[in-house]
Length: 150
Image (cartoon, rainbow, N blue to C red; front, side, top):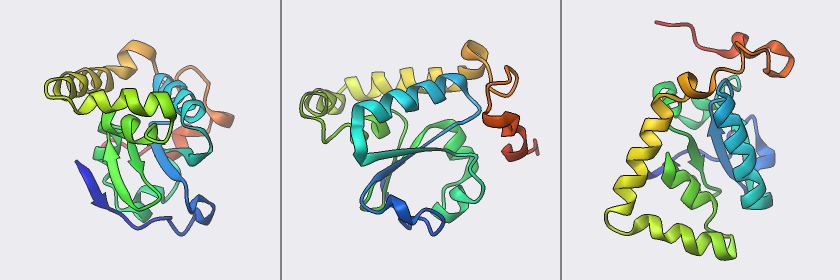
């Protein structure tokens, strides 16, 4: 999914005006580390937030299941991208990285990259563990923001 318009910035985060917002699984150790890395690479045009932040998904109109399946990037213009494409779009303003990321759109590379992303996303807890289980959550409160199993 790409270029779906969402209301932006969300009412609870007016400070995001003019910045892209990356939503990631705050319970996943790997996701947290990679969102920090992407934040450093993308610079001050990107803000990251855990998808478990109370009310944020609802304000943006992003279904919980979609956000758990792949990271979500909402650009300052309100377009939404997910998965590996979110990384590519987040890095679009960087001189060298932005140019290299355009390779993602070459036939075959996009499909291969997306497949790799989906595999890592599906098994991320098995491979790297959960922050809650390891006591790495900020203040140990992640469990309060997790949606209970249906």
